[in-house]
Length: 220
Image 1 (cartoon, rainbow, N blue to C red):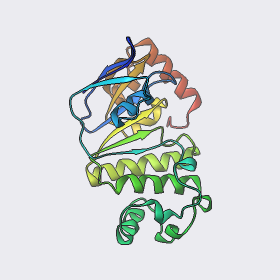
Image 2 (tube, rainbow, N blue to C red):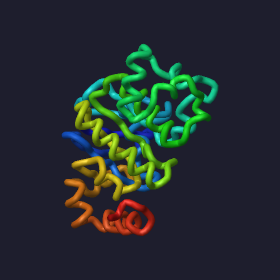
Image 3 (cartoon, one colour):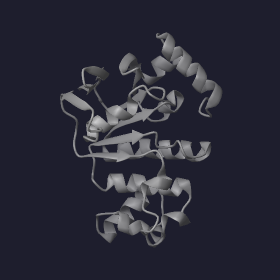
Image 4 (tube, rainbow, N blue to C red):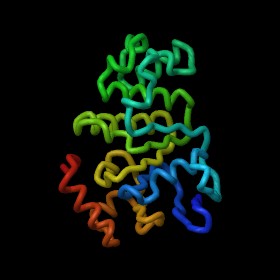
């Protein structure tokens, strides 16, 4: 898969990657992570153009970073689904929620519950590829850990692939086999997650890991 994103003659993103099972695309703000996701979904701003070579497994679903803004506050949870009630209940069970939440409004749920609902909605499309756009940014450390472990479990049970886009390099070991480090629209290092975490080769990767170890709660 090759993705090139242009702003006129300027190339903003020029990357190549494969998703064998689960890939973490890691980079700081402004590195091109969000543009890559938008290119995959066909949602780039009108002033930008994308050229994508290769194919991605479809259908594709996405889990966005902020569950508090992902759902309509005036719509009950059940009305956000486009599947029947029986399927809604089974999806909530998959993500560890009780079906009674279907009759509640988003404001009545915690952040962790809301993100599980968002994941259930994404899974309702039976995706072959699940895009994760900083899916735990708005959550506390314990809830973040639980959500990532749950997604990893569902990946194995349901057989979908994952593209996990984040600046949180350390959390990727909970979810992904492979990793690519993105800097200024280019991949500067790629390989197995644990190999990169234990023996980073690029100086940018080393700084990113050091920064994460100081500020994140995933190092154990």
